[in-house]
View 1 (cartoon, one colour):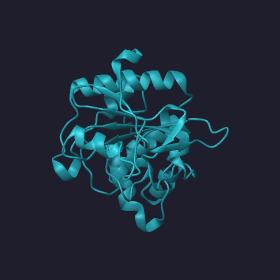
View 2 (cartoon, rainbow, N blue to C red; view 1 turned 135 degrees about the horizontal axis):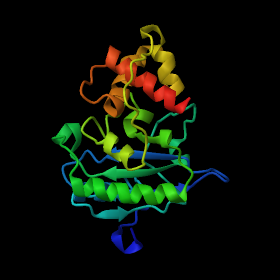
View 3 (cartoon, rainbow, N blue to C red; view 1 turned 180 degrees about the horizontal axis):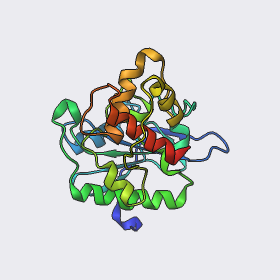
View 4 (tube, one colour; view 1 turned 60 degrees about the vertical axis):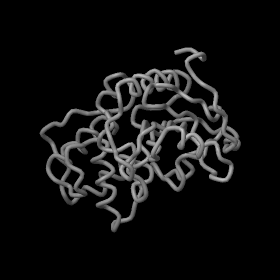
Length: 229
């Protein structure tokens, strides 16, 4: 990918990262709006006070909204591994998709190919561990569902972006599910556990978003922990 493959669409919605803050997280979103142009207008609207570093259209066009050296306003109230200012340490990419509210649909091959190229470039510039390539739902499970269960996390991991551990025979005990999710990085209180399980399922067990810790879900948790511990 070259700079000529990226279209500048500057957003005013950004500020300085804290001094010395390393970029160690990549957060993927869907736009959740009826069209890509509507999403770009909102991401560039100073009244909206939201933005991302990049936005990728369904046809694969990439728009650069905020420089990577600046803090874009994409994650909102979020938490991962005890850190609450996710915007300060992350790069945010929005994928044009109407989302669950406006007709959620699969992410087209051209869009996923563009994402893979862009993400690999980002990973080459910043020390982002595979376990910190996350969805918005991972860092904000009580508020967000994106990029959702139709997003190809497995294919992304196959390209060297993020993790997709294959399910084994070992499983996290039912009594230890909350502890396992906290070890992975999710932040929550006990009453929020079903929402956090749904977020985990949207990322790692996409064939059933139940909020329940069934055996397959617990095997996926064990497989992920074996990789990141």
